[in-house]
Image (cartoon, rainbow, N blue to C red; front, side, top):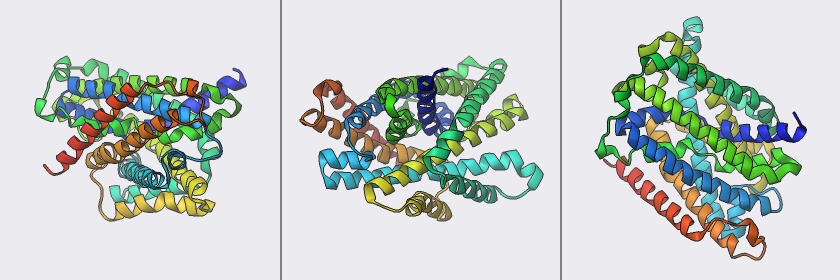
Length: 380
């Protein structure tokens, strides 16, 4: 395997590791509530919107100078005010995701080890957070070196659990539709595809091979979408309306305790890698865009989700749905605006910006409608 291929794989793994986190475990539950056909439609449409957004941002990053991250790029093109709004939305989105990782990571750690050490789920959530916070100090270099192991294990374990579910499949569970909940999956699905701020890290990993960035993104999304389709179909077809919010523990009651063990390992790998990558993103934004010192950036990354957790924000589906449906949408709309502005800028070669405005406008409409339905659902 050539050096270029290894670097390409590492870059793609960083995207997969950042995106496949706790969102994958929320998908089966929300799909089972709305109906699998509705959930699958959201997965394909919202996934396509997320992919185009990431590709659009990649084009900006490839033409950008310096080490700015998302908020810095937006400030360059739209001004300081919108750069600040991006920082707020990005921090809120990442912190919301990291909060969800603490909630579910502790539950998976408890399922794996409580039989040996005892203790409450809350205790294991604190332990999970402490481990992640300590490892995060190593920064991007450490995350990149460990991530390939975790992503490989994650995909291998997913294959095992999907295969193990096959004998228990009931296709009728995939045909149920609940029209009243037709828009319910949006926030969770958009959250599950969240990873746009990983693009600068991918460019840094690729180095002199940065021209492969967009191809790396497309390959990564292809893998992610395939995993989501297969995993949600496997879980919903087995547990149907009894699908639990984290998917795995409920699945175990149908196909055996081994699924809880394997699924908890999947969950632990997924949330661990995603927590670290999102933490690196917050650190880099603080360091490069806000001139913070290294350990101050680390404190920015870990303090807010910990405080929110202590304050009692522990509703898994609620956290990821609101995070994706509101803060994720704000970031997406800002990326669309930045891309349009860049197309009119003399600083960027026009041949590098190929996404037409009519497509960007349709994407913006989808995002706005999704955010409206998410906010409305909060008050119902």
